[in-house]
Image (cartoon, rainbow, N blue to C red; front, side, top):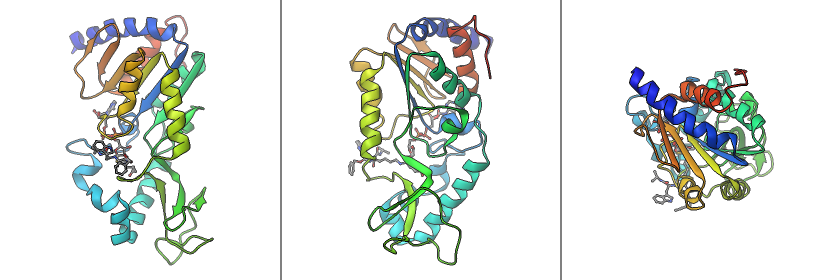
Length: 259
Ligand code: BJW
């Protein structure tokens, strides 16, 4: 155990140097960054959402058309869980890094709003948000969930078609504005930090390779990668709520941690 921590600390010293000198840091986050806030990931073998629910039924337009009531209720429960959850140390450290580097973007696949609640400013939500709904018919957007009424799901006030959460389901295109911002953020970065994502879901997964190809330093933290380092790549296995505070400390040892 302590060998593992020693190994991580050595790697963090190398990363600290890169991060201190970075001009533009771009972060990509996934479900793992919110796991320590009590929000389940998708692909964890025991607790992941896709080990208990079928993605085809709950995260596709076809699933929604087959059973809109179940899909609406599933997202309504997840929305309440997200509102009740609190940002954890990893969310807070990412907000702190944003304050310490010259330029920063945070691309998130998460729909829970926890980065914004932790104080992050430049957040790019590429898989949508649980805060909003839109209609199936014409994509009319509502920036809030309607009051619960008799009809589930409720209807669009403009065109009366069914409302659905404004999230990106399998087979759907990512929101164009968010995706272009994400691509620009990757092109501009000299350090790319990926936290809590399995890197399985496209097109977001391809962002790491894009960052790599342009020579950015790549840092990956999740519970799957083996701990290792090369001059361009740093792999940190461990909980983000432990690793990111250590990363902040290793990067700016002279400044006391605010979290
Ligand atoms: C910790 C931790 C801790 C745990 N600390 N770490 C090319 C090839 C093959 C397939 C495709 C392709 N292009 C497109 C596809 C199809 C599909 C796809 O990628 N499928 C894959 C499964 C193969 N992609 C799409 O359909 C996308 N659309 C698209 O490409 O449009 C163009 C197109 C259209 C039509 C045809 C073809 C192309 C849309 C993808 C939408 C994904 N939607 C979801 C649901 C969102 C709403 C909701 O929340 O319900 O997004 S699925 C789910 O996966 C969710 C997530 O954002 C996304 C990514 O998951 P994430 O965040 O990485 O979570 P996990 O669980 O996978 O990983 C957690 C990680 O955290 C692990 O590594 C843990 O170790 C780690 N961890 N605790 C640090 N404490």
